[in-house]
Amino acid sequence: MTGKIETVANREGLKTGSAAAANMEHPAGHKNMLQLIQLRWIAAIGQVTTIAIVTLGFGIRLPLPQMLAVLVCLVAFNIGSQLRWHERQTVTNSELFFALLVDVASLTAQLYFSGGTTNPFAFLYLLQVIISAVLLVAWSTWTIVAITSACLAGLALFSKPLALPLDNEHSFPNLYIQGMLICFVLNAALLVIYITRISRNLRAHDAQLADMRQRAAEEEHIVRMGLLASGAAHELGTPLAILSVILGDWRQIPQLNKNIELQEDITEMQTQLQRCKSIVSGILLSAGEARGESSVKTTISTFLDELVEEWRSTRPVVSFDYENHIQQDLPVVFDSTLKQTIFNVLDNALEASPQWLSLEAMRENGSLKLLITDAGPGFAPEMLAQFGKPYQSSKGRPGSGLGLFLAVNVSRTLGGTVTARNRPSGGAVVELTLPLAAIALDEDKGHAI
Image 1 (cartoon, rainbow, N blue to C red):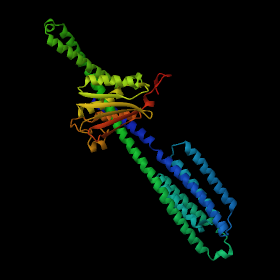
Image 2: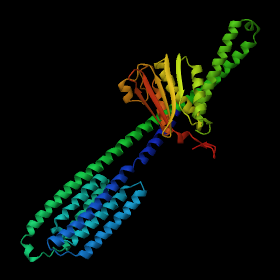
Image 3: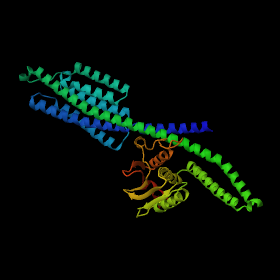
Image 4: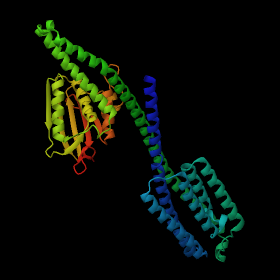
């Protein structure tokens, strides 16, 4: 049975991990595409500025119709790209590759009309190659290298040098050196700015992917625990039923009926047995039914009041303060999983502070916020740093630390959060926040929104 459970859990974890990787593949690519669009706007502005300076400042005649046509095509392509990628979030390697090919083609056309390899701005090819090395996979990068090399060779063979004015022919070497310096500064500045941004995007992508993998591992752990719990619940069903029958038979024995103390013990045993059966049923309900199928339609205040009453009556708490600050009640849908989550947090607080703890409930910014406060020793710094991770506990018992781990993951599934902090006066505060949209009841449809 254990082997089968682990196989199913591993398969579920692999599916979750693959889905997480697939979902995390594209955000960095989208940001990098936006960086390319910004770089293309800078290139367009730079081309206009360079054409104006060369034509008006140095009196060099350029084929303006052809160069402006290339510039218009580049601007039109960039406007189309901005509109497309503003709406669409997924970017593939092929799409980034095509965008860089357009930039290479535009640069090649402008260089062809402005002197070819005698134009110092031919070194801007290096910018395209380096950006491709950062953004693209290996085959795409080498393709860009081959294409830019072919373009440069083609410019050397087929382009013609610019016709310089007679009074500027003797100063051509100086103009070329000045152009090289400008090109170098431009290349260096753009590379520092954009490679830094692109690297930051890639680091953010890697961090998010690592977080998703961690979540997938935690969810796999939860799947395994759920399977083990449901299996144990099924196994406990038979002995609990047998004990119930035996206790019922004992009540029918005349000799035992005369013993009042023994009858009281049998009654208490039947009560506790019934509680065990209820717990087992709750485990099976949580493990075997999806949210919504085992849900209860109620209101926030009613749910919390009943939860507090049940928890207080079944725990040996000395002093428990419950404050419900929710003034505007709301129809909601709660299930047994969420109820058990709150129980787990309260149980942890009770173990740390058996003399006193409190629960405060409030609505804040469209969320339900629960503050559970105790007067215990508080969380150790290393536990706060790893809050919500499995087996992070100061109790020193096998399996400790799973209560908060499950609370964090159940809340995260609903779009909420669980945070913890220590109080300056001593003790700890655990804050559970759930968006009301995740639990609110759509009265027209009769289910959670």
